[in-house]
Amino acid sequence: MARKNPMHLREVEICKRIRDFRRETRLSRVAFAQQCGVDSSTLANYEHARVPVPYAVAKKVSEAFDINQRWLATGKLPKKPYMEISSALEKLIPTRVLFSVAYDRFLAQLITESLHDAAKTSGLSVEALDEIAVDPWLPVGEHSDNLALAAQRKLLLFTVQVGLRLPNKLRDQFVTKVKNAAWAFIQKHRIELDEALKKAPNFEAEMSAFLKAKLRAKKAD
Image (tube, rainbow, N blue to C red; front, top):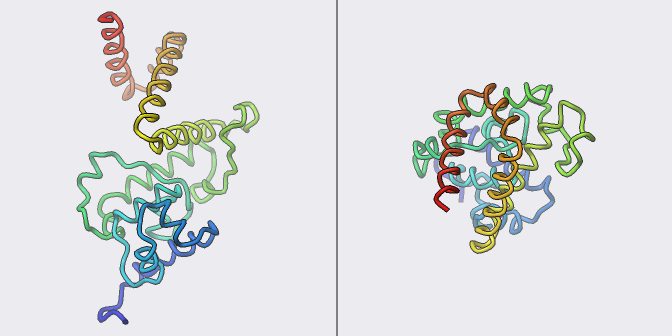
């Protein structure tokens, strides 16, 4: 049955981008929906532009497939990567708001700035960010200088994603192993870390507080 009030063209385009992206993955609609954590029949409604895409669904799709929010909202490249949103900002976004509205009101500036920062770091244009073929498992020396940091970040992100997808018991073990490894590395390279923190004043206070708390906990043990 046709909608009494046809959707705005922008909402239709968002639906089409989800459909086209899913086809590019060569996943069935059922498999794609399962990875996103949505019902396949609901996904079909979006792909056929029967209903507009809410923010909650767009977030699931974007997170699951590393889709950049700006591309999904506007069609502007790059398609990847997904940009993390702080929990404080997430709380400001109404539960049932459309993705297009959430993007315009809450995300557009943040996403744009994050993309430009990533482009500056990699030495590439914003549009070229999703064209980088970065293998995070290669030794750093096997990447060109402008891709080394991108590879490291991708590996760290992958590590976090793996941990979050583990069953609770295994996730606890995984987090403990990562924390212990990070703490051992920090202790071994404290001097170098102190020098690096001098170049990142906004991060220094947080790291200092973390280290003090960790040392207090060690003394208590």
